[in-house]
Amino acid sequence: MATNNYPTPMLDVLEEGPWPSFISGFKKLRDEHPDERIRNVVNGLMGQLEHSYETKMGYWKGGTISVFGYGGGIIPRFSEVGHMFPESKEFHTLRVQPPAGNYYTTDMLRQLADSWEKWGSGLQTFHGQTGNIMFIGANSVNFQHFFDEINEYGWDLGGAGPCVRTGMSCVGAARCEMSNCNEHAIHRRLMNNFTDDVHRPALPYKFKFKISGCPNDCQNAIERADFAVIGTWRDEMKVNQEAVKEMIMKKAKEIGKEGDRSAGRQYMFDNVISRCPTQAIKLNDDDTITVDNSNCVRCMHCLNVMPKALQVGDDKGVTILIGGKRTLKIGDLMGTVVIPFMKLDNEEDYERIVELAASIIDFWAENGLEHERCGEMIERIGLVNFLEGIGIDPDPNMIKQPRNVSYVRTDGWDEAAEAWFNRKREEKMAAAA
Image (tube, rainbow, N blue to C red; front, side, top):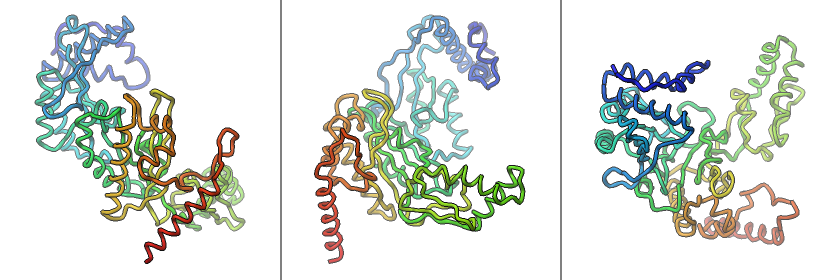
């Protein structure tokens, strides 16, 4: 057992609340782990954390370390108070890419955990804010050994620094009926093609791929990804009218009014019909519903609350949005639609999405400022210049209609729209020839 534990009165308070505390996990490692090295490392970590709470200052500083052949993937952490807590004076974090959709087997997890206890602190998170598996607490002697071992059985480091970062995708069709694309195939194809940009940082700043299989966007891709892929459909959603009727009577029973059809209908109005942002769904007198698909904006509310009655359509594909990010140089940005709909049915389709990503990264790498995200560059140079730079023509389907507020000019809109329709007509004629 560890001896001479650092006193942690302030950390102890964190165990007093109603919720599980990370401090309890630290103490379990410190007091019960069979490896004395790990016990001592965690003891030192807790000592430094207590010291930080006392002084209200952080004492980790960065540096430069990497595994052989790579330029990123490791977050260096050197302690400025290492003389006070020598057991944890180096506490580097290795970012490891998870499998697409975060699918693991217990054997995979045990193998990773065994390697980390062998070479690191035993502390890890699934997953960090970046999407990586975060292996927290290796010293400068052991981090290369840990990487070599896990790389031997199939794992690779994720992105850190000005590079393409670790991609993320949702659980997908394996467990979700809303899926509109092969999320994991998209994830794998993009990351495999840009692996060199993950490991050897050479970009203005970070660039993230995230893939969500439907507009629920469980990966927060629209808000967080420079290149967001969102599964969608362009035909009519499927309606099971018998399931609608069953839901009306079921909800009447759940609210204590079994058999009261009017109560079930009122519930439907209050919780489904009235919550459609474009009033695209109507409840008929015979307890069927009518969906105005031309006005559906894919908010997903009705499909989420009526999954038996409503399903996504059959003509599936993806929408691609560019430029999502959290606050940095400018405030938060949501992604801008640049590809309203793209089919991903064959090898050529997947090549198109990789080519698009390559064009965007190349244009941003050439025109972005240092420490400037892709969305911030678009804000600076303008969307029209960005689209021209990546070779995409403006498309009326990118937006519902031009904004009509006074500070937005729409001069020439009709002419531009007519030119677009003429171009599409010519493309259709050429394809038929």
